[in-house]
Amino acid sequence: MAQTANGEMFTRNGAFQMSGKGQLVTATGDAVMGDKGVINLPPGPISVSADGTISSNGAVVGKIKLVEFPAGTDVTTAGNTYYTVPPNTAKPATGSSIRQGSLENSNVNPVSSMVELVTAQRTAEMMQRALSMFNSEIDKTATQDLPKVG
Image: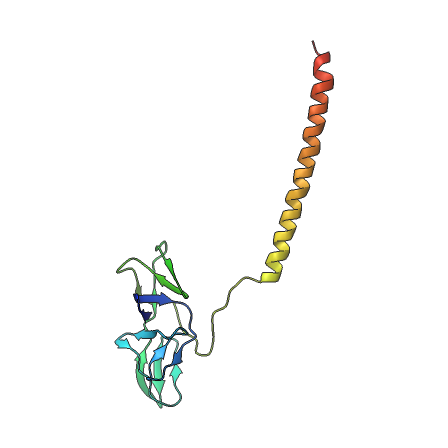
């Protein structure tokens, strides 16, 4: 969760950094919220555990507010990788975790997706041509053979 100019919003973008004021911030400079407010970091190396606990020199300095939403929650895009949800929807995370030094990427391969799209388009074009030929044959039969029935 991050504190933005438009209020608290949720993000999946974990590219956090330390601001000049020593706060943990998002890539756009918004403060990352912890369980007890904005997270202030001391100078020096830090480590982040799977539950979001941030430590420096063996001392806990904060914990990232990690939440989950129930299935079917109306999640709305708010720009800059931010999301909003209806009030009181977010619950403390029980099945999610954080991995220090890792960023979530898309699970889509753009090259194979484009190949699949081109293949689907060509298949659709072939079906359209086959249907057009079939309709042409039906029209020919209708104009030549139907007058003979009688």
